Length: 222
Image (cartoon, rainbow, N blue to C red; front, side, top):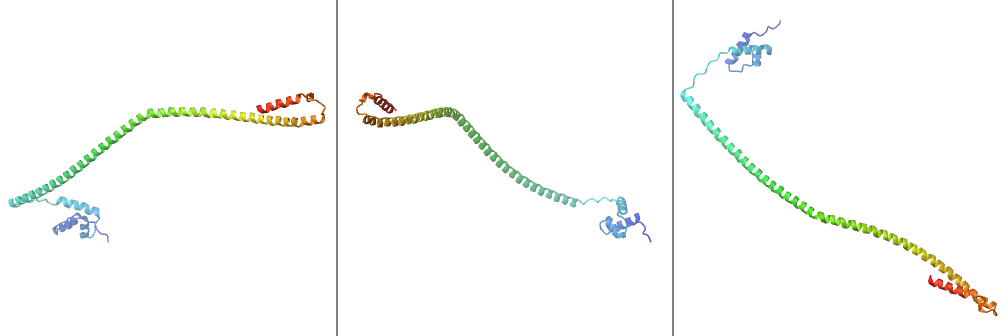
């Protein structure tokens, strides 16, 4: 057997019963009270019930209660105002402290920047002062380098001349040795010729002493 749908009267009655027991009137409470019903239907009937609830204006408060309420509100306001003022004062004091610290740090930073700028200026002045000396040193270095190049070229020339002179000396020494050998041969042959021909006068070979003399002079000249 099918269950019939929830009617508006049923929802109104269940909602009023909940309200009379000072319980919250919700869709879930209505569904539990009625035992069934869709949330969509219950929500529609609950909105309709709330729109039909009569509103009764509250009765005016007695003067003494209203005065006490005003006094209590004034005390609460005064306490809240004092608390807010203390908090504002604390925040303001902390802000002033932070501002003072920030200003001090900023001043120190500016001083450091000024010191660094002076250092840079001093370094630039020092560089400007050293640049002429550096240019002079570079000029002297270039001159010394050119002189070294010239000296190296002159040394190479002298080495070549020395090698040539050494070669020439070697050649002359070789020639001197050859002439000495020839002279020794002539000297050995001269007594032998006189021994073989005793009757021959020394003028028989007039060219031999002259030849020996010329070779001796040549050797001495070498």
